[in-house]
Length: 390
Image (cartoon, rainbow, N blue to C red; front, side, top):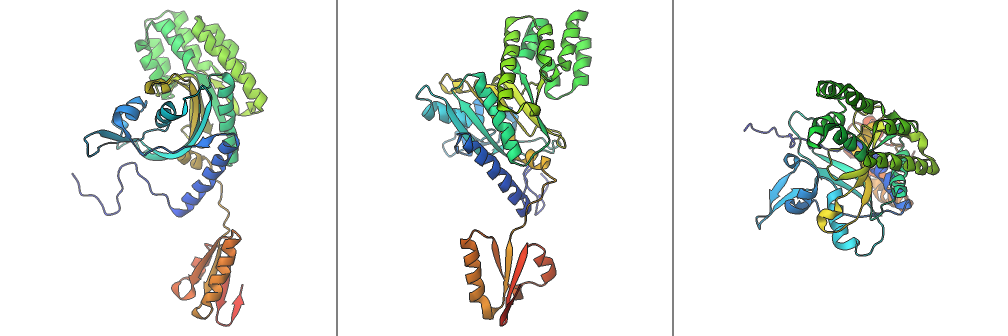
C-alpha cells in the first residue's frame, strides 16, 4: 500500500469551497421552497443503515456499497440512495392509514467508485417521494414538480425525457422469449450505446421482421406522435397498457402547462430493479449525464407494506454544473476598523445583522493586501481614526 499524500482525500470524495457552497445553498433553498409549496414535507434518515434491510433493498450494486461493522457485529452501510430508507420509514411509521403521503429530502448518498471512474463517491440528492398513490395524475404531478423545481433553480434550457419500463421489457420478452436474453439489450440502452445495440440486434438469430421491430425502438423518441408509432411495434396487452399510460400522462402534462419541456423516449431503462412503470430523466445541454431522474416503483413491499409510489431525485452536483454560467450576487459588506473605533464598528455590524444584511468585521491591521481583500465584498466601510470614510 502506497503512502498517502498529506492533502489526499479518499477516492471519489470532494471538498466544497465557500463559493460553490454558497451557490449550492442558494439552489438547494430554491428547490426546497418549491417542494414545500407543492405540499411535500421534508424528512431525514440516518446516514448509516443495516445492510440486511436498506442495503439489501436498494438497487445499488453490492460492490458500490460502503460497508462497516458496528460493535455488535452487524454489517451497516452508508446509505446508497434515499428511496430505500424512505420506504423503510414509510412502511414502519407513515402508512398506517390508506392515504397518500408526500415526502421530500435533501441528503448526501454514498456509492463507491472504481479508480478509473472519476465520479464522486459522495453526492447530494434533493427530491420527493409520493407514496400510496397509484394514479397517472400523481406521475404527472411529480414530473411537473421536477420541471418547476429546475426552473426555480435558475435552469432555462433542459428537457425531461419520459418512457415506461414495461414497454421495452415486453417488447424484448415478446421477441426474445425470456428476460434473461434481453439483459444485453437493456445494458446497451442504459449506457446509451445505440451503436452497440444495433450491432447486437443484427447478430441475433431472429427474423428480419423481429430485428426491424427491435431497431425501430431506437426511433421512438419525440413528441406525442411517437405514441402511435409505438403501438405499431408492440403486440401484447401489457406493452399496449404501458403506451396507454403514457398517453394519459401526456394529457396530464399538457394540463399542467409544461409540455414544452417534455419528450417521449421509449429507450429509457434503469439499473434500479424496483422501477415498475413510468420512467423519466432530466437533461441539460452542457451536462453529459442526467441531472435528475425518477419514476414509478415497487419497493415498499420489501418492508412488509403494499403501496405503489413515484418520485424523483435531482443530483445537486449535476445541476450546479448545468448552472455553471450563473453568478452569485455579492451582497456582503465589510467594515474595516481601527482600535479607536472598534466599538462603533461592532455596533454598526450588529445593526446590519439585525436587518438581515451580511456584514464582515475586519481589523485594519490584520490585512496586508488591502486591495485584494476588498475585492471580495460588494461594499466597504472604513472606521479608522476620528471619522468614517465610505
